[in-house]
Each structure stands twice: as C-alpha cells, then as structure tokens.
Length: 231
Image (cartoon, rainbow, N blue to C red):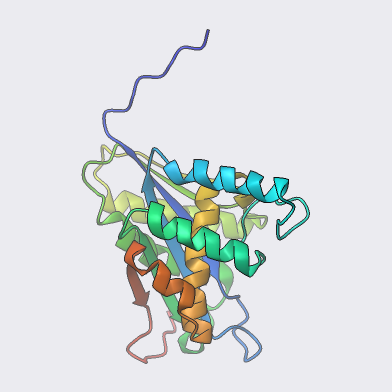
C-alpha cells in the first residue's frame, strides 16, 4: 500500500515557459521574438479536459496528426486549435500569463548570441511573474521544454536561479526542470498562449489572442523606447 504524502503547508507555484520566433537576427528571421510563461497552481483541472479531448480526437479519427500525441498550436488544424483556445478561455484563471516581446532589429550584436539573449529576456519575464507571487508560496518550480543544447540549458538555469534567488524570500525553495512538451499539458498550454501573442505581434492577427485576453496579465515590449540595446 502506497503511503500518501501530506499536503504542503503552502502551494507550489508552477511556471511553464514557451517561446516564439527564432534566433535569426537577419532580415530573413522573424521580426519579433516572444517569451511567455503561464503561472499555475495545482490542481490542474484543465489537464483532465485536454486529455479527454485528445482521446476523443483519436477515437473519432479527426486528429490533426496521425498519432495525436500532444497539442501543438502551430501544427494543430483550425478545428482543434479553436476548441483548445475555447477551453483555455473558460478554464485557465485570469491574469496568469506574462510575456516579453522583443523587436529583434533593436537588439545589438553583443546581445544576439542565444546563450546571452535568451537568459537576459528570460530574466525580465520571470521578474514580472514572480513579483506577483513572492508571498504565500511554498516553492517555485520553473518548467521549460527539453533543451538539447547543453550550453543554452546551463545559461537558462543560471538566469532562472539568479532571478528567483534575488526575488524570493530565502525560505522559499525553487527548482528548474526541463520536460518534453509532449509529456506535459502545462507546456502545451504555454505553447498555445505564446502562439496567440506571437501571431498578434508578428502578423497582426489577434483573433486567438482576443479570445484569451483576460488570461494575459502583461506583455512587455522590452525595447519599446526605440533605443537600440547593445548590452
């Protein structure tokens, strides 16, 4: 018989991360880069609904991909995408999504290498998310998609730990974890929100964004002053 763990005295805050755009800073690359996080507490009630919907798609043979292994906004067909956004709009709490928007043409050459650029922007993003939850939290767990490049992974972990150490009370522990998005609905939810934000900025398409606007707490245009940043 498995012994049940006692409930934590304070809730754990889970922060799921996703990104949009690319690291190509030439004219061939995307105009914007977006970095988005979704801050959630258990129980993750939407996970059960998404799981049920996934198996409905499989059983009715209308999945966007043959195996329907997971939800991925850019690849899901319009029917599935619309249904998932509707589920997000009704089941995800309001004001839990934060995003940093980077107009890449304003990024100086010294900041463009991914191992410098990504941690810097991630630091800005986490400040927005964590400052709203620094009190009344038992632990903070930051989860990103699996990162195959060790150099990038180490840089991200350093950025996350630096921000959290500076912002959280000393009594609040924190962890950084890298999971496959295929295995975690939290990352798939972050992917959907980030896709809607990226589409709004990159293509001027705010249809999906409008549907989930009440869940989005902040969009910070990091270079909004128009000044080119070289740091």
